[in-house]
Image (cartoon, rainbow, N blue to C red; front, side, top):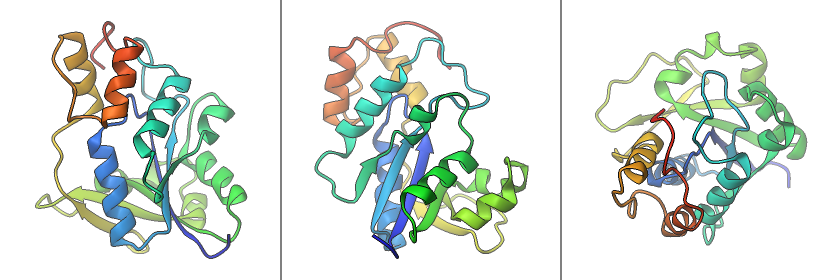
Length: 196
């Protein structure tokens, strides 16, 4: 379909948690997007994958998380490509898959403020409008147009915290979607390894 407005939310999603879901939902509503595509990374530069879920498990958890929400979907474009994941590769592939769509790349406002440091920033800005997400009440970083800023409610959860809680035997229910919590338990994920 052409002329679609599609949000793109990339990340390791190890695991996906309610904070990710809130960001996707809030940006979708605030910018009147047709949908948001979650794109789990195969490997991201600067992240160690020791003791974490496999790419296939992260895709499975993302798919479970978005079930029943027609505004959200999951793409395996980065995992299928393999290797390190750079945003320019993700956006190039998604632009080819969705010709005519207007892409909105969703990231933390602090990351978007450093877009000039990313790989191929000029190409990135040709491929998508960048949406900086910030928690309500936090300072607004200096973003120049065509970047947008969307405020989201603060959700005090992180993937690192979910993994830590699993390792120490604490519950993760209400931090991740229920089907994701069940998947984590069923597959005995995050019971060992580093806290990174």
